[in-house]
Image 1: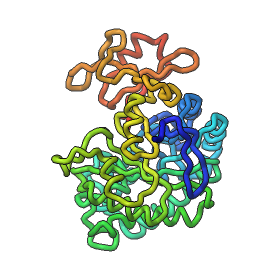
Image 2: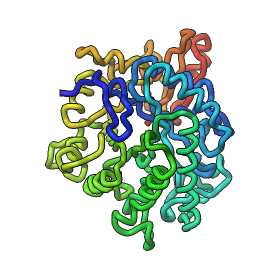
Image 3: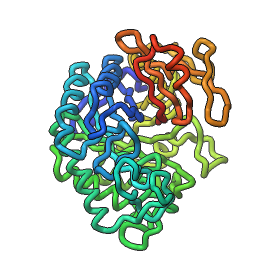
Image 4: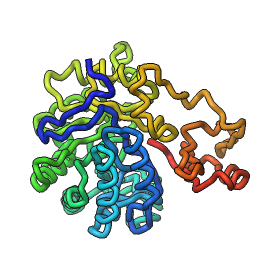
Amino acid sequence: MNLPSDPFEFQRTGKIAKNRIVLAAMTNKQSHEDGTLSNAEIDWLVHRAKGGFGIITTAATHVSKDGQSWDGEFGVFDDLHIDQLNKLTSLVRKEGSLCFAQLFHGGCQSSERLTGSVPISSSINTSKGSKSGYSLEAKEKDIKRIVEDFTKAANRCVAAGFDGVELHGAHGYLISQFLGKKTNTRQDMWGGDLKGRSRFLLEIFRSIKDLVPDSFIVGVRISPEIERMGINLDDSINLCSILNDEDIDFIHLSCWNAFKGSISHKNNSKTLTEWFVTTLNSLPPVISTGKVWSHNDAQHLLNQGADLVGVGRAAIGHPDWARQVENINYNPANRTEYEFKGWKHERDHHSPRAILPEDIVVSKGGHMLVVGYDNRYNLKQFASQHPQHIRAYRMDRIC
């Protein structure tokens, strides 16, 4: 039986994570307008490396200028970004952790306000980031350019000292827009059946593999099911089989709740992780992520067949979660159980929600970083009432 504290070796590269706990990518919104990684974001990630995480994954970083989705998002589309990225990887390496960069393009979720460009997608799709409310369909030249941008970004990550990259094919961003039957209605080689809809992802992966050293890890994060996009479990399992044949280094299952079953197989109690593990005879190393809070949660996923466990929200308020989870009784409070000193803030629709422990990240100086779970939350009042405790506050979505 594998334990959360057991090391994990990526067989193809021989690189070893000191344990099986992965800091999953989250939306930090801490970096600079030119895409340069900020010292604040570096500190946030290094703090989790010091807390024992075997693998540190950065927030999603846009590979193209027109792929940016939110303010404060760092980039890897220019060589000017390399120095700060190298600072991050050097500090993470000192703590004995591996460091991955999550590469992405927002597609129809990109922001025209930030990029100055109308968002492009696999097909014409609705787009909150577009002034018109719709994206453009990517032309052949756009697709080839973005594949090249992913490749150049991965090469910059090599230069910056990263151990690998995670291609963000989950959560509705550009790669998953190509994968979805509803978001990809193309009739050319980039659409149609799963072979066509996965071509964009495969071209990115192959192009990167042709350029980076053999020791460099390349994996992909996918959402097994997104009903509104036409991404279903059966296609995702088949995609995993295709990627396994391509010798991908890992698959990261972004389950949102790793303990629930499939929405398309409601009469079957198997979790999403179990579906992949039991259906495929051969598959890449699996990271499974979604509402992991306790030692028992992590152990449960490993027992189901996951090779590594991704942790997101629990790591916000518990930067040493990976070290604490070695204790079999470790179970930090779930977000639904707490208020912060009885103080509440409200959504736009005036439904109160308590400030929770994972909303509070304590810095070295004892100050607090207040992190809203949704950009509609009003945290300004809290900041004004408790200025002595506030280093900064963000209103972003943790994912």
